Amino acid sequence: MAMTISEKIIARHAGLAEVEAGQLVICDLDLVMANDVTGPPSIKEFEKIGKPVFNANKIALIPDHFQPAKDIKSSELAKIMRDFAKKNKIKHYYEAGRVGIEHVILPEFGIVAPGMLIIGADSHTCTYGAVNAFSTGVGTTDLAVGLATGKAWFKVPESINVKLTGKKPKNISGKDVILTLIGKIGVDGALYKTLEFSGEGVKELTMTDRLTISNMAIEAGGKAGIFPFDEITQFYIGCRVNYPYTPTNADEGAKYCQTVEINLSELKPVVALPHLPENVKAVDELGEIKINQVVIGSCTNGRLEDLQIAAGILKGRKIHPDVRCIVIPGSQEIYKEAIRCKWIDIFIDAGCVVSCPTCGPCLGGYMGILAAGERCVSTTNRNFRGRMGHVDSEVYLAGPYVAACSAVLGKIGVI
Amino acid sequence: MKVEGKVWRYGDNIDTDVIIPARYLNTFDPAELAKHCMVDIDETFAANVKAGDIMVGGKNFGCGSSREHAPVAIKASGIPVVIAASFARIFYRNGINIGLPLLEIGDAVEKISANDILKIDTDTGTIENVTTGETFKAHPLPPFVQGIAQTGGLINFVKEKGTLSA
Image (tube, rainbow over all chains, first blue to last red):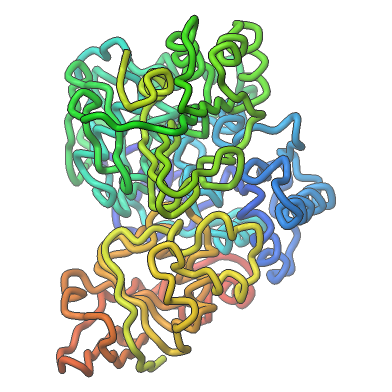
């Protein structure tokens, strides 16, 4: 039987020759991941099961959401996870100064690889679809069971074939691709389903573009967002992954529940207006929308290429006097490379705040909380009511190009 | 389980950031989370919800973050069951896993209004709107998932079986 990428990876991990959409299966997991918000309650549930961890080398615990600790309670959460990691000799635990944003460092450190089956207690765990893994977000209880058994149950998802064609124009990045897709299919357009990307346009997308796109599959309700394995995957994985992995591509004739086509050459820089990621509009169709803050970073857009795009715009320019611009490299390695490339100089000379890696402002944690009535252009992934602060603040989602331009203009726009 | 209660009615795409905003995620104490449940869209909820009241939403209920704090906050508010046109995937799993029944009823949800009284049998998925006299049937859960729900959640299920197995 011809299978999709999702079906192939799930079948292999369920010990079956084939599976099809709708089937319920129990799978062996290659990696189980949590952060400082979801890890501690998972640990509490895990302890109720009364078993040891299934494999200390296949667990990643990443303190990135409220760390370095924003308050006493957050510090106590981090301590629960730190003590657990130490006691159980968890291989992938990284302390402040060595850690970064979970979905940035796991690919960067080569902890995720093609063909893997991964669960993470974070909805953006779908990011690793970019490196051809089947990877999905779960809650703390599923994670607790994963820690104890190395297993999870899955309903094999139907897949939507997202066929990419055309050439990617200048100033268009992965964020414009995924926001345009979510604008087309809606925030529940892929509910219970996987987005599988295909077509000539895939090779137009860098690994950074792909990581951004897979990251936001959840914003269409998706269970995963998976790219095929190609030369770009091979190149990215090549210098990072030093263990065997299984490139997995869809069979000819695999069944999809729907096909959506996106012609990259027709894409324009876009923004998702408050309060849903599906409220997508081209920047040139917007009237004058003044802003108070810009955030460039996060698991969606905190990678080197994102900072390069922002630095390209901000070089020799100044942040608008009415705007605070916060730049957050996604990992220490990215931070260091941005220093080496003099981009951090550019950001500081332009008048930006530069922070250590953290999820902070994206979820209204810390490091840039909005007051009532304030507007923020953010390269993050959600613009729900109150997401970045006061319930009467507004978040406009965009890629690094639009975000950096808007920071200079003081209103949403491009230069 | 059979329950009867008053409806708290919400719309489409109720996300986990409004069910429990991230500024309260520095704890996972259920009672503490319940104090702030729904605060960003309904300041009256936490103060006025009574044990046995029922929450009803539109499509894609529980979208967004994977935080299990969201169904935990709802459950700790005294809500025994949530009804929606459809649920976001992670929220749905989380509800089942913590033993909070979630009933998916599609467009029939339009026939339930705020303050209606519902009589529900969560085992059969039967919902009677006492206020209007109408009856609805929820989409059934697959048998394996029903098994998890009936043992009171995934942790109990795994403890009983010794591992995760069908």
